[in-house]
Structures are given as structure tokens and as C-alpha cells.
Image (cartoon, rainbow, N blue to C red; front, side, top):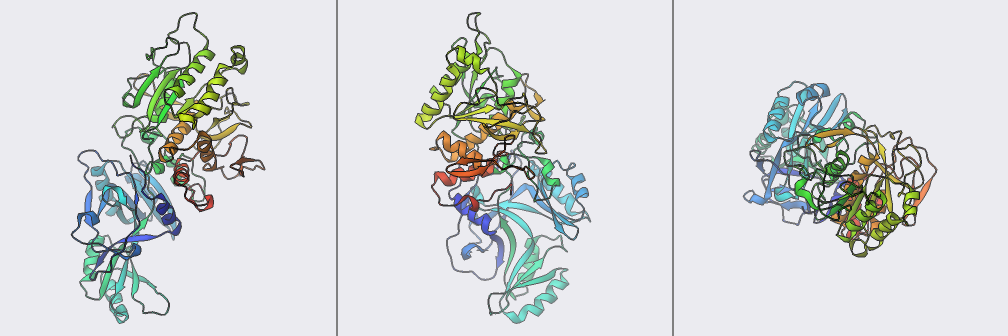
Length: 578
């Protein structure tokens, strides 16, 4: 997995709402270098080859001229991702499996809507797009695009063509031509007092391909250039795992029914995957047991530890631990099951209970401490702990858990510190132990409507919240479970920590904690006059939400910029929750 060559370019691109185009032109402009950033190339199963279309001669970014004959100047169309403009969203939803494939829907005014779709199957995607184009309720449906090898731009189609004339006097003839083609010439673009050469042509009244329309306009001899406007931006990076649509924490389909100003209630993981998937990072899940042969986990597991025996044998699979491991790092795009938040991170699995122990080794405090010690000494970057013990039990044994966590934070990762993530607890009261130890990220649970789960623990050491109700994940039988609790919120944040460390590998554990905090977002309507200092700046905080819902996309961008020491203020970084 590779991250962007120049993510700062992406930030400014989004901020400035720059648009580029597939441009059909009769005259070349002078060459100049175009900005670019790297994205993860889409992964399609065999038989889903995308369509390649020529970029032709021009891209409007910095006036870069491109050769029609150069393969690298092509645009590749996603076979399964397209944008639909419609007057009836319900009709579109019905064709698309009652919103199953919808990634975004926005009201455009005047009874028209824009719906973005990601099907996950190229053949089916083309069939659905063609079916939609034949519907009277659909104005138009065009594919998303990208440039070869994922280098360049993510391109979103827009509902117009741009035209530049050779001479201003030809405007009247252009109007006559567009009228004859059933097109609408609707806006002149002027620059100072110069001639009016640029016009936009609406595609609302035609379902003919933009390529054919462009050729017809160019063949008139009055158009210097015709460009299909393509908006630069970020799109959701989806997986082809069959059960991933049930993981609302990764991408909440309920978001599409909300106005854009409302809070989005997922982790924004599908956006973050464009830049990080946890590659090269190790997450240790300390829990009650694991199904190490599970198809969605086995290839990611690199080490196991049973403190009761001191061996690498996990004697009994357990539903709880298997579910938590799946949320953190289930394998993506293996045509099975689900996806983890950090699907390319490697897993280290350690048991905290006395499973498989002799009768003289039955103290879970000792085992939990040994598991944490083993994790940091064996190279774990992130340690996920979805469990609790009583502090008095740790005290009776001489505080071995406290020592193990403190050592991991201080000495782990070569002195940069392991990131320790812990479940806030399910008692509906104060946060459970060892959540009060310095350096621990305590995670509460929300439902898909951004409401706090009533049993989620709270208090002054709460850091963030994450999805923890109706969580679909792996079980210990090779199947799946639907569960709830802060236990399942915790590996979500552990996965986000892994994404952060991939793009900012030199971050200290404190820097990771702080990035998670300042990239989170409190929901609208939460009234709080409480603030907590992060890096000498006060951030809004609530005793039930902490700093808010963790956001993988915001966290990865902030982490990358900090790792590169880019001087961009937080206010200048696009926050998709705002």
C-alpha cells in the first residue's frame, strides 16, 4: 500500500474546489507540470476490467497539454462507480437494491438529486448504470474516473461540458447548434473585459455519451476546445467483501438520507483507505481467545501468546476475541466476510485469561500484565484491550498491569511508545480499570444515530467514542455475530491508530492520541462548556462523548501532514464532519 506522494496538494485541491476535465480540443496549449497525488489503485477481481477512455489533448489544471497517443494520459473509468442525477430517488433506490449500493445522495434543488453509487462488481455496475440511463426519472448517469496506476486525480463527473470558441462572434452559431442537439447553452465565463469565448453546455437534456457530443461540437469548426468537467475530490474506497455492507461503522448507509449539514455517523474509513490501510503496522489484540484459522484473520496473524503456558498456542477459539480482532484487521478484498478498519495491519494475539492454565496459574491480572508485556517487547505498535479488572486486584498483586502499560507507553516502539486503546466499560458508570493509567485511550460506544449507548461508561478519562451497537463481526465458528458494547468500539480506534502510524511512523504514542482527539467531532446538539488541552490548545470535550466520534479520514490527513511537517493549520484541513 502506498500513500500520497503529495497529500498537501490534495488538501488544497479540495479546499479550492478545483475542477479538471477530459477535454476534446482542436489546438494544443503549451506544456506545464500538473499537480498530482497518489491514491491506492482500485482492486477489481478478475473479469472486472475497467473501460479506458482517451483524455485527448488537454487537462485544464495549469494548462497541461497531453498527447492523444500516450497511454499514460488516458482516463480509466470505474466499472462499478457512477453518479446519477434524478428527479426520483426512490426509483433509483429500487433499481440499486433499496440503497444497498448508494454512497451519497444530495438534493440539488428544483426537485433534482445527485446520487453516487458503488456497486462492487464491474459487470453488475455497468448493467445497473445502463438500466438507470433508460429510466425517465433519471436525468443522466456517468462513471467516476481515475488516472492510470492511481497517480493523478480522482475524478467525479459533473453535469455539463465546457466550450471555448475561437472567436466571440461564433456565440450565436453555438447557440443554434446546441439548440439543434437538444442541449442548453447556459452560462458565459468572462475574464475581465476580454472577449466572451467560454460557455457551459448543460447535459441535462441528453443521454448521449459526452464523447459523441464533444465530437459533434468540434466538427462545427467554431470550437477550439470542448471539455467534460470532472471534479477533483475524494471518493469512498470500497471493498468487495460480501458482508461489508453490514458494517455500518465503516460506512453508514443511513447517512445518505441526511442533509449534508447533519453529522455523519461512521468512522470515515472508506475515505481513509485511499491513503492508508495499516500496512507495516502491528496490532496486538489482548483478549480471551481467538479463532486463529478464521479465513478473514489467518493471513494477517503473525504471532500468538498464551501467558498461562508461555507458548504460542491459542487453545480455545473465543467469540469475543475473534470479533475484536476482526474489527481491527480482518482481511479486505478476499471475497469473504468483512473488512477490518486496518485490513493490511498484522495481528498479534495474546490471551489475558487463564485459558489452558494449570490450577496454580489462574490469576487473570498476572496473565493480562504478561500479555501486555509480551506485546510491547515483541514489536506491537498498537495494543487493543477490550476488558477490565478491578484496581484492587491489580494492587494486591503489586500493580503488574499498571507497570506493564506504563512500560509499553514508555519503552514500546523503540521509545516512541505503544498506543494503548481500552474499552471504557459497559457498566453505565465511571470508566473501568485500567482506564485511569496515563497514556490509555478510553473508548465509549455510540449507535448508528450518534447516540451514546446507555451502558457506555463515561468520565474524565474518556477520549473518544466509536460504533458499538449492532456491530457485525466475526465469531469463533467461522461465521458472524451481531454484538454491542465498548469492547467492539475499542478495536475501531486501534485500527485508526494503525492507519495513523502508517502515514506517520515516527509519531509518539502521545502524538497519535492527540491526532485521534483533534480529528474527532462532537455531534451537533451536545452542549458542553468543558475543554481539554491538547498540545497547548483547548478542545471541546464532553464526559460522555470525549472529544467526539473518531474519524479515520481526518486523522490520516492530519497525521500525514504532521509527519511531513507541513505548515497547514487545522482550520485549513477539510473535516468531513463539518
